[in-house]
Length: 212
Image (cartoon, rainbow, N blue to C red; front, top):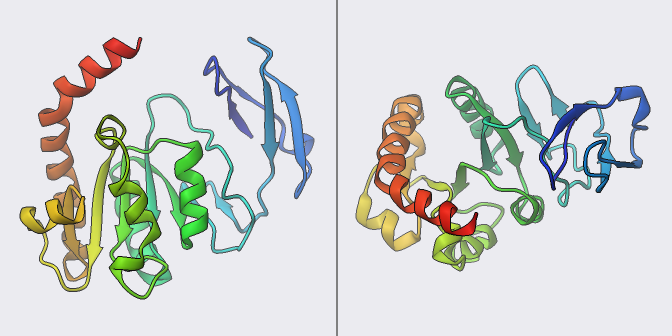
């Protein structure tokens, strides 16, 4: 198991057999000695081959901290439809994203509380009957601007047209992707996120400098 200290960010490896499945192991960072809690996920919950961590196994890991090597781009895929999620995951893999798949609002909100993602893909009606009841969307819309600018939000929709900038703005998203255009997702993501990174590059650089 690869582990990253949340304080000093050093990365190290713990033998899998040292972390009992279903239990929490508390260790100290070998560099700064800050305590770190490790949880072994059930075998079906995490796939190292696909690079996707999913909560379809109904495991109680909504509050877990993702352990990702420095420099790796991360994505949170909030998609209740399993077939749709299975279609999106390979696309994100080809774009070199490490993916966490949330099928439930509680799992997604727990992940957002403990982690920061470069990309969030969110179904318009995620884990709800309609967009007005989408708890994750409400959470994102209420974030302070300096936090909101740190990630790119793509809203998946069955009705709204792809790349409709005005509708995306009204929904608090950076981009809308109609599910009928899923086969074009790789090109659309690559182009749109590149433009976003260029546009907000100076803003984020200044923000990081002031917080250093």
